[in-house]
Length: 528
Figure 1: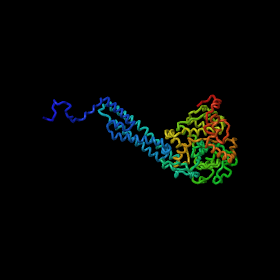
Figure 2: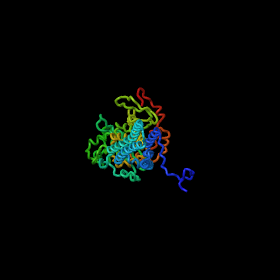
Figure 3: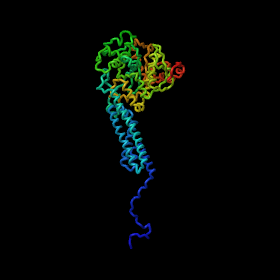
Figure 4: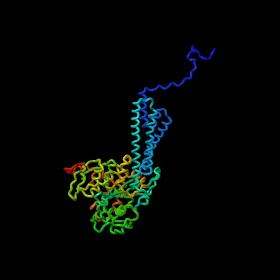
């Protein structure tokens, strides 16, 4: 009897016959094209996914894994160590490397988009090929354009850093400090406190009025920011532009040249006011009097302001007020409380009235132009009211220039700073400054505005011993918020009784609804 089954053998007795795998049923042409479009788009959002759908699983999986690792790794690094992450944004070497990496990433991403579409497409009609080509072109542009802009921004930022902040070997300053940290400049991943050995950092903020119609620069804004490097608590000291008899340290060669301070004996001579020092000292003394320097006027101001306030000034930063609006616009504007009508333009001495005013309002959004006039408008007011407003502008920038804003608008900020900011702060200290800026945002900000006839201050003949005493007291008050300041903040009234040497900036810059309502509107002018 044969063991081979016959046709009459029951089916359950038959041995399974070896057969070829059933061919996959092809999709209808229109459905296949929809699938191609869908996975081409998905493969653009998640590189590698389109290749996986096209059965190129090893290549697609590898690309997807690399993409996921990059996104997750960078995201975790930014969250876990935001400080270290931001270090790369102010390192010119790393910025150039990032620019190249972004360009390479853009080319590779476009190649993945094109490769995914070609691998997915089968038997497409002529019209489908045209539609697919347009789709791939649009997706490639959507991927490449942002990366190209980011690469260019990194290049611009690297150039701006090199222009504004010189390397230590490229800049010369006769007053540069010797105790400022630079550790994180070359090792941003290190977990160290760059300010562990320096308790305070003092930065001189100058606002210059250089313009085409003026000879030299007068520093109408002079503010010293003294920062507690451990807590970020900051105290700002504003000096009037017409301060006379400004002193120099006794061991400075400028003290030999000006034994009675920066004066000709007349405290009311504008050529010997504080704001004339930056321009006039370099004209009157040899350029190398203090040693090698790129900016003798700034060195003179650092020494003089430091002597007047009893603090050693580490760095200066000069901002040309004519370009100040560019910086504010680069930040996307700032918000300020306006308690009265602020003039735009006008001239009190020559009798020319302003044609525009900034109207009162709470938390008003300011463009660069309006913020500039808020800080410097003087028609119908005095220098001291202007100085009050200037500290509010600085405080607004400190509060609103957060890391997210700085990163998102970094190219605009870099371009603006390249032409209007001058400083002796070297590149090597920038990583530590990023670290400190994050502490300042969380710290208390207080201030003293030295006003003629207030608390013993007289502009033509200041009592510098009394000023130094007030400075010391104000720095101590910044460590914690006094009860008097809290009450003043709650009342939101600039006229609250003053019981401390300094003022809380948030309180003094708060919105005063009663004052705003009582402000007299100047009729016949444009309100901004």
